[in-house]
Image (cartoon, rainbow, N blue to C red; front, side, top):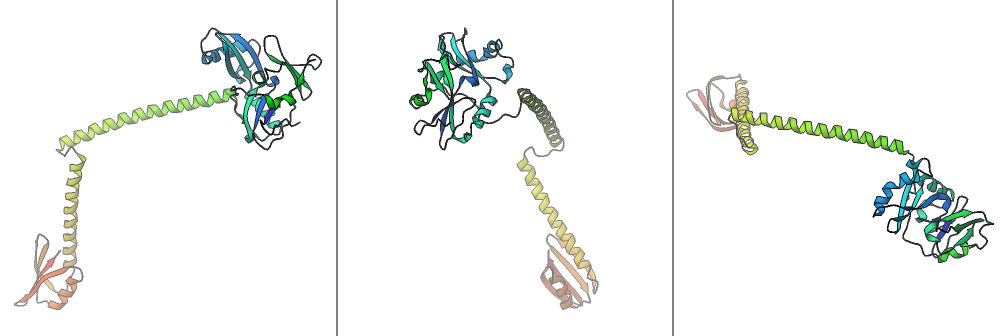
Length: 304
């Protein structure tokens, strides 16, 4: 039976309800889905009251670990307390046929129907007891009950929405605690390793600094990089010189009488060599600065 209002979109959910909706709905829960008690608790805040609820509900319920709790403060030290199983409500909402994405909010009928002392809906009757608690009763007891279906559109919903998860929690509380414990252990191990690594890095930094001092190396990275850059440039130049000398010595066609290296210039002396042939060989790789023949001796200066 659909109880959706085109204006307020309020519906009453009992265990056999069917909800047809194409737009957002607010669900009012039958007392079948929760336990409600009024407790005198000598605390000042709702948060403090919530902490002691598992102990208080242990007197009437067995497995309090499965329960979620909600508290409303009525007056000083007096609280209206609700206990419910999230999974059970989720399953019945899903069973009702409503698309979960259309559920705007969920409310306790205890809070939302308090202006109607007795009512019936879906062939079930409900009344408020003398101490103000809404309960489900046999139809014969609620002789003055009115139809909630006719009144539901006029209900002004309170701000007391139920803090409920509209998804199925496949993990039990024990499993969740186990997972949290594992993550806590992993976090502790990672923290220990991080501390250990930091200690090793500090020790290594001290060794590096000591080595620098013993070797009279610069203390700053900038100075060290400048020195490395200088030596890298010198190494590259020396490598080019070796490569050039090796290339020129490989030319065996004419006798190389002597050679001299001065900075970036190489002076070569060939005996009885053909000037053009020697120049062609050398100029294929290096720049010839000068070339002259003097009494059958070829003198060539090459830039490296």
